[in-house]
Image (cartoon, rainbow, N blue to C red):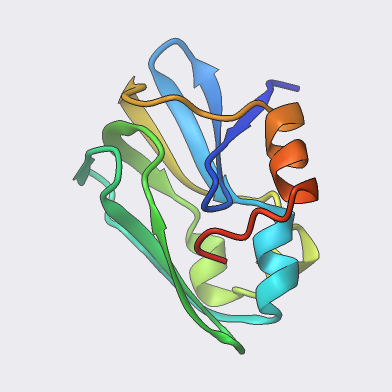
Length: 126
């Protein structure tokens, strides 16, 4: 399986090709917020720049805005989550959106760096 990279705001990106990626949220975020009840995804064809609001997820504890960890054009959205957002709790590493023409604009954390961040008490945006 291809390696995932993370942001400190608990978003992951998995590069599926040289210029394509999938984006999702970490299990840490899903577990900390409890019970996703609604997910709003950006639209296919949207152009996202690093830091743009790409997704918002309404949990029992409140709404969490997710920001694009990379730039690109939205190639696909995981429509199944719109119908059944609880799938995110059952499979927390489910992808939310897929991008093409991906550009990596800022550093991302490796899995090991992200886990160390969590052990050190990192809870930014959670």
